Length: 191
Image (cartoon, rainbow, N blue to C red):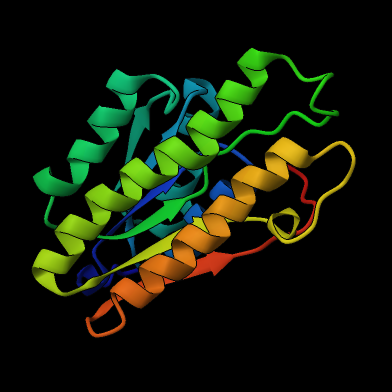
């Protein structure tokens, strides 16, 4: 398969499984080179090897825990260091279901840090690069639970509600540019 280099490079977080892995496969099929980001090096390399073989695109891997500031900064710095990056899929996230009183503070911090903090940091890095070129796409993975909640999802739903409203705000910010911002709202998925 020949690669259409005009598509550029897509950065996909949480790319070792689930939605991130599917985005990686489908974007590679469309001709994007990839930078795959995830915590689990072995799974990440399996995905990269398979995509290279199946689609003939360039695939780089970045083993990073986006809950760790140094790792998050390293991924954010990719956008200013690589002009070929034209797309970001903000997919990395975490959830712990339980009532507010049953969920540990460390789990609350993990959800807000990754689902909100990392997503905002990477959106900003991408937006600065994309606006300077007047071209690029940010895809933020929200959830239907950003619009609804369950007795066991108040924290997770709150983080995804933030993603929904944040992304809609970004769409308004870039409305007069060639930068695109998409919000994806999956229901339960096998991740």
